[in-house]
Image 1 (cartoon, rainbow, N blue to C red):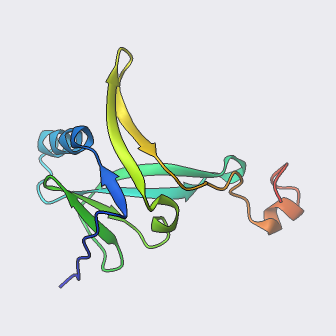
Image 2: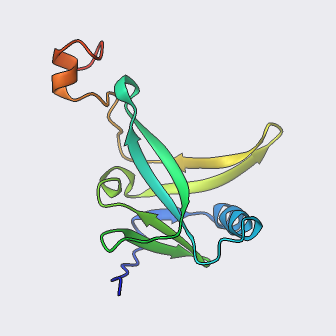
Length: 124
């Protein structure tokens, strides 16, 4: 059995974002799925945000529930995302998710070895 940790302070999903996720899950018939939010390396452009609909919650994931929508964050990404708010914005160009993060994000995703080897200009 997965030990589920629920902590609404790790990340916040606005009501508009929760509805957008519910709509996506219903449209794709993905009952029991969650919204996974993560950061990934982006080379010299630094870390980038990612989101996916996830059917498997791992034991080490941080889990929060917002209006029936589970949000999961892995143990590494939580260090960068703690306190962030995910919203869903619609305007004349369409709609999309927006992450407001109070934490400073690294501006270079290179390791010091890559920077030293010249594999990433301006990093290091």
